[in-house]
Length: 285
Picture (cartoon, rainbow, N blue to C red):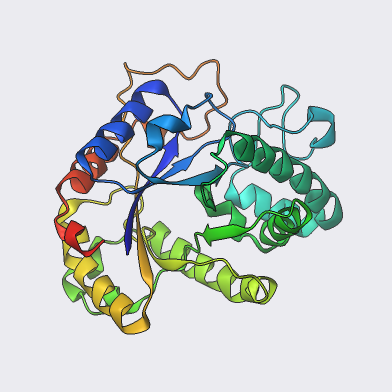
């Protein structure tokens, strides 16, 4: 199984419509849904697998403001980046985990109430923040306390072998994405112990080294190598895209705490829209 996934559904009506366009063409079979932006109608997504896109870095908090003061500003807007959350988890461990617990539980509960009763519960996170060890521990605690059976959790730890076997792309990776890949792999090494008694499924993940620009040419070079590796290891594959593109004149985020505007307005999102629409390896689903 290859999951062609779009993240960030629910950020904005127009960006969500473009994700829906990909679904209607059959270009996507998995969508990650923001719990804390616009209210979404999950019936529009009935053809695809849904996932909670846990969000700890932007938008409004869903727990009471007074209970998550470390995480938000005085208006209740989540205010920390991945790095900021990591620092808080090291400097204010107990208070941080207590407040993250409340925010994660609020988002999980809100999403669960939207999800059809017969739909599998899948989860990932915006900016992959659930991989921060303190956040991962807290997430697992919430899921256990709420007695939620998770069918699938994204583990963004990319296998290195497909990339090593494609030397023509060595100089196309950004240094930032290389660091992200190594950091997330290290965090998964730490988190494995926490997850060892859980039964959720996962997949070979594809979307870190190309993050921000999953262009068609590079994806088509790497994906066959993922398929070969997945067949050998008897695993699924998850390929992540951000096809909900916007131009500067199509959205106004003044009334929202949107920390990553530059990313949402990037022309590379249109590149990712075109890429997922044109990938040919659909017959292996």
